[in-house]
Amino acid sequence: MGLWYLGLLLPAALVEYGLYALKPVADYYSSKPIEGLDVSRRYDVDKWNRLKFYIGAYFLLPWRLALMMFSVVADYLVIKLALINWNNQPKPLPKWRRTIIANATRFLSKILLLGAGFWKVEEVGKPSDQACVIASNHCSWVDIIYFLTSPEFPSFVSKASVQEMPFIGAIATAIQCVFIDRVSGKEEALTQMTQRQVSIKNQEGYPKLLVFPEGTTTNGTGLLFFKKGGFMGKVPVQPVYLEYSLENFSPCMEVVPMVAHAILLACQFSNKLKVHRLETVTAKEDWTPQDYAQHVRNVISHRFDLPQCEVTFEDISDLYYKIFNLEKKIN
Image 1 (tube, helix red, strand yellow):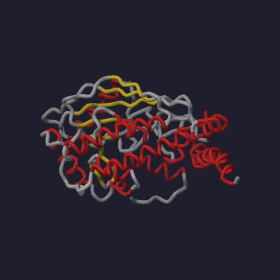
Image 2 (spheres, one colour):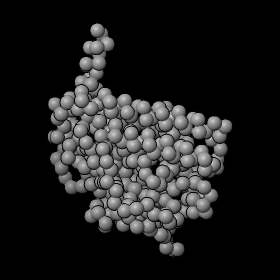
Image 3 (cartoon, helix red, strand yellow):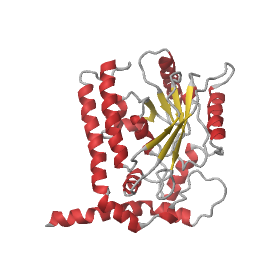
């Protein structure tokens, strides 16, 4: 009987946890007037509806959470089997290992997307055969899940701490992400990214490299400053713009905690993502990596009429700590 009551109350408890975790965000933006471009603002706080979340929690959330957990654990187990006797060697995976990992992860990531309420992703444009790097705006953890379902199945540039995350760290390592330390290893990170880009161009066996040059998530209403790391090798780049529907609870993550965000997102009947792949861009000989980064930023900005702002990762990080009244920590 006790377990029956627990099962009955759990969906409501998860919704309440999500709303409680996001309350500082709602309070902050409810009291702050809208003034100009604000790429970290939650424009949807007045649309959050407890009744709708509750309905979704009881009819959608249980099986969606089960799908999410199943996909992550199953992918982890497949990867462990595919990497037996590999020992994380610093070279491209053999084709047979990567094929197993890619096919399993694509399929299971589609299940995870379904668990997050994305019934279908609309795609405009095709993957480039010439591009070595994919440069995309960054709005949500969903971005990464989508690219794991994509034909390119790229490696990522990721912060070093991801390696230590349960399950996720093993998956990121298996797809041979480039792990960087934002604070203490900037020069080493640039060297790593340059080497990987050159290796891809030389067709040494690595997949394309996906970079989020903004360095953090936004609400998609503008583009942050593009960092130069993804452009150090000056290899061909395919710009990508991810466009989320913002009708209800937004899939964009900006300054909200991931677990609470995932719970409330999964309570919605459907979420929408449209992926725009643009033409491949190549660097001019006299461009610096920062020139190249700015050019790609201009291409996306002009194509989708997106304003550019000089907000940085550090600015949004500071805002997150301010909203949640946290002491700033260095990872």
